[in-house]
Length: 361
Image (cartoon, rainbow, N blue to C red; front, side, top):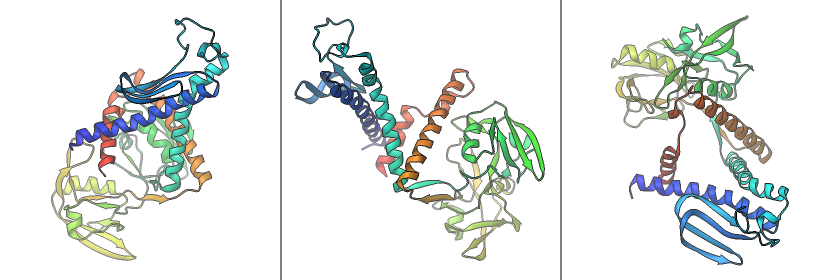
């Protein structure tokens, strides 16, 4: 089965489940208040399959682009019979509850699923909930041009006091070609800075050029690449390159632009012991970018991994859903004002691709 067909089927399953939950909200509220439900349909158009139970026809229809619940007397243009089971015969407050029950079920689904995920497997970058301490500044980037330096701590950005990286990253990503006003602490000084992130990558998200302070721990090795062949292992902490301390993996990226395919000496800390490896970089594709770079084939993204108890998982789910909702509103606002590219969002096509990949793993 082709990847394309798998993606289509997986997307249909994901959207179908979301629609089912949404329509069930309307259905359950209508039933509770005694409104007759004539049709419960996943999809529109011609009826393909289904069954009738009581007064309701439960069906799957031909066009899988939504779904609907048809209630007796819901159309104001229909002739009213006065039947107590008709939608418009019920008080306005009951009709209001029936109307919002669908979106409410989607909200409950989002909170519930994320709570369950966090209880089973909670994972996030190790720096994400830490103060926004800059570990490295990439050369010739907006952050470098603004005079930011490694060791600077962002203590205010866009009105947010003492932000974590979880708060800084969205501000950066949603501000391509837009000034960000921030205050950084450098030693005992508080410095006012203005950084204008530049559009970056296929999605054209904002990129400032700063890198969070985090340990340079190898979390993944690309198969067949020089680092794996040289003997590096996951869990190694890279502490030096060519005899010089390595403050961040981003510093290695910059150094490889200069050394290109010349062999480099990488020093790592493995189980408390220093080990050195001679590695010859190769030029290769970079995931998410249209360009090629000299690479040795490592990923260094240390993660916090664990499980959260129910109360913590629930509270975290509420916070994450609130944060995501506010980001969506901010994104839509900036799209309307033409401040971010339409490519910033991942629409139905990307949802289908992601669902397809998950289905095949």
